[in-house]
Amino acid sequence: MTSKVDGAGTVKSSAASTTLDGPSGAVSQLIDSLARDLSEMENKHGSAHPATMSSRNELARICRYARRFDEALNLYFQTLAVQQRVYGAYHASTLRARSRVANTYYAAGRYAWAMSWFRDILVKRERILGPDDPDTLRSKSSLASTCQAMGLCRQASRLHRETLEARIVVLGPDHVRTRFSRSRMEAAEGTS
Image (cartoon, rainbow, N blue to C red; front, side):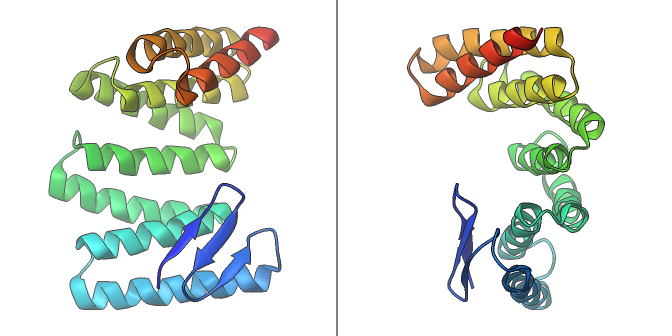
């Protein structure tokens, strides 16, 4: 079974189609179905197989959108452990797995944890990809948003400004991510 969460929070699946704001029973059924799929993948391919990791991430993503953060974190940590073992701490796949953990902490309102993870990811991406790589800039933007959520408005404003300036050069002034950075920076400056 495959599923996808669109921007409106609608889960589209070959087995079910529901809105996560809808009845919790439907979401629980979808999570149960995805958990069974994951178990089958683990039994068939093992925990490190790409299909298994994809299935695990899919289940984690749905748990996160359903606000079942501890379940999502547990699943994301399992994927992260495999990624680190297989690829090492600085591989792009490992850094993406770390970002999923950080984003889940942020979504759960655990900003201190999110900040720690985002800082670490940013340092690694700057070292490996360089300061102006789009993934590095995404990490800097996430760190800035976390600072803002924690009330660290000056730091958030500085990070958003740095991200905006780099995105203008790298992506152009009208790119969607550049516009996003501009609006985030303006919001941060309005609260500092």
